[in-house]
Amino acid sequence: MDQQCTTLSSFIIEENRRLGDKATGEFTGLLNDISIACKGIAALVNKGALAGVLGVAGSENAMGDAQKKMDLIANDLFIDALQNNGHCAGMASEELDEILTLPEGKIRGSYLVTFDPLDGSSNMDVNIDVGAIFSILKAPADKKDPTAADFARPGTEQIAAGYCLYGPSSMFVLTTGNGVNGFTLDTSIGEFILTHPDMLIPETTSEFAINASNQRHWEPAVQQYFADCLAGEDGPLGKDYNMRWVAAMVGEIHRILCRGGVFLYPIDARNREAGGKLRLLYEGNPMAMIVEQAGGVASTGYKSIMDVVPNGDPHQRVAVIMGSKQEVEIILSYH
Ligand code: F6P
Image (cartoon, rainbow, N blue to C red; front, side):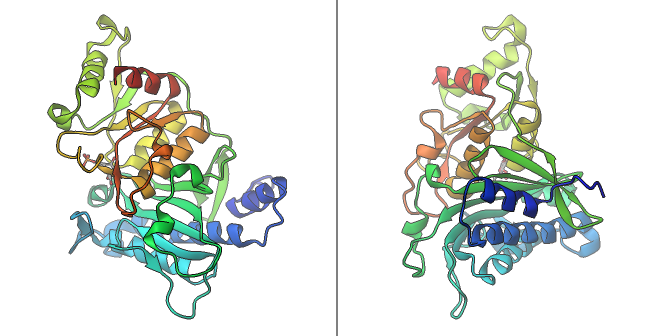
């Protein structure tokens, strides 16, 4: 092992020290809990069919999505990691109908965590990227069990956010509001190692990601931007575009952090009432914080995602347009 390497744990401790935090170690402990859940998930995702984790579970989540076996296993790994060490006071997950408070006898910590334990899980059975997304909020100071209202806070109040991408290698990407850093899992020692310090999204791009099969349902602004992208250098945008669609937001955002691009899951006629398709508390907000901390822009098309006022539903939906600053600004000018 390289003597200079920085592990995720040592990075977090150092960062707390640099920020002058007279830390109790609770926040460091919380991030450690999350990273342990992610390592457990990575090990199973990596074994795939050998671990018997492919296929459907035969149940549905609160939004009516068919749950995969691995959705439920990943959810349990997050809950186990978060409820036992006294760092977390409650959680909200894509896979839980309601928010989860801790069982009797467990210490209520100072933080709330929202998470999508296996983003893009339909990719699981076809051995393509999946991931986990999380967001951390401060818990109410009274140490009582949190309610759904305690989670209903705008993205601007997030203390930290991150994701773990389970791809060719597993990567933990984290922001605590002081830039974005990426850590690659060294499976031989079981540690996330800092490999991508200070990740910055290039301001310009000619790569977009959108599920074009929804085209006829989009609003006119997105229809027009898309048409202009397809027109390439002969159209008003004056350049040829490339398109990608991983069908896992974690994969799209990671690509954008590495080489730029824009990711859109805009309002369409079928989800207008709900506000979009993706979930605000455990998809939109954490990814918006990461993208903005890396110099990008994250919008609904009409306002900053992190300014959306939550309505109290832990599964509230939101429209998402995020990525390279200048390209997102071009898209916003169509709205
Ligand atoms: O949970 C949402 C999600 O899986 C995202 O990660 C991904 O970007 C999107 O849904 C894929 O949607 P579609 O089914 O339209 O390809």
